Length: 294
Image 1 (cartoon, rainbow, N blue to C red):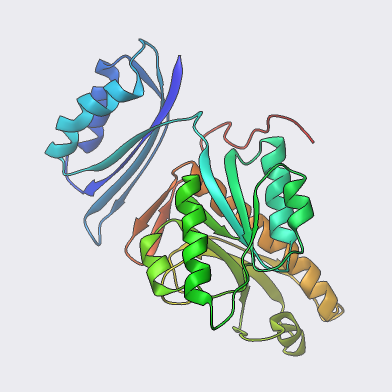
Image 2 (image 1 turned 180 degrees about the horizontal axis):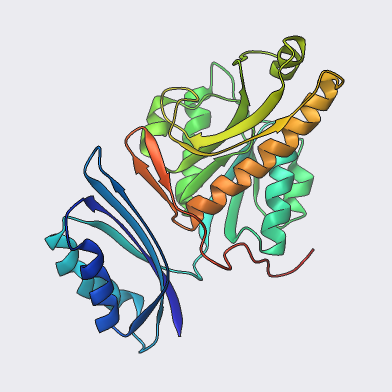
């Protein structure tokens, strides 16, 4: 029995759920998990369904025969196999905590992706990447060569067939062109503070202002710096007794966790863009299971 999932986004109207479930039933499929959301403000409908094909219907047949239903409801729909692994390019600069965390999760199967390349503007993590049998590309970026550097980055993305770019603390601003070309397919991580601190040493600024909560936000990258649709967020408490170094250490942990959760949601097609926001459905049962423990 093959396991698949179906994602649907369309204008909200009566009969969508019945049409989808009826189609899957007629195809000999058994629904194992389902999430849906009606955006009543914008009259939009979103749905993700996990199911088992019990009578042998393959993904090509399911896609082909669903076309009529999709047209009837003006759907943007997609069928995916639960076995497929999304091809991912990771970009990193000199902070390696997110990269190392992602490599570990990938290695044990907790993050089922295919890391096809790591791109950096420094050589710091060449060895750890190569030791994991992943291609490493060091592309220096300056004001003078930025267009050429970005063109080389995009060549690697295209040649590798990557469907997602992950900015694992990559400390360069991407061009508007790259953001548009990869719209909805670049995920970034950055610190989150109340109040907000920008520029150098944000954790030191937070310490000096007596912040009690630090955290991280993972979002899709747009041309508006750090203003893209949010996928995942988390905070942790700090106290007056902790040092700026404590803030940095705790921040590293939160950033790593939030980025991994955002990627997990994206690769399982649980995230739907909805204007400047996202709809993020909960994970299906078993989707966090690892192939091995270490």
